[in-house]
Image 1 (tube, rainbow, N blue to C red):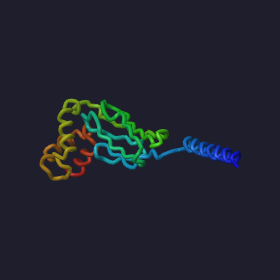
Image 2: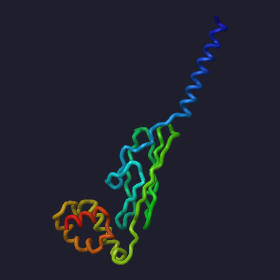
Image 3: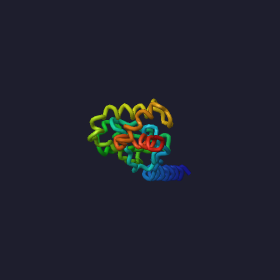
Length: 170
């Protein structure tokens, strides 16, 4: 009986080892995003978006939430932005430490010329005040209305959100 117990135990341990190794090799954990916000605006969780930034933006705040709460999220390209296209990468590494996916977005900072170049500080001040709701995002407020004509005359210098606010309401 003793001679039979040891080989059975060895066979069970061997089988368990094969299962553990197989699970380790094929193990995958979710590396998807359940939500993605950049500067308080929601975006496609599949990546691939092109986002036009306001003049003078030097960095963006990225809130990327993974489906797996134990997954690791790494963001690169959110700071040190330059005129033209900037690559924003969001890498999600699963809780297994092996599975990963990278989401790519393009952040576009307007190239300044003419009025936009000459008034970059003014544009940044207006955009910051708008984003911070100092100029309010609702129509009819004098603070935004006082700048509407100048913004309308130079729409391409301003963010999509501010362009829409001005064209829809002023």
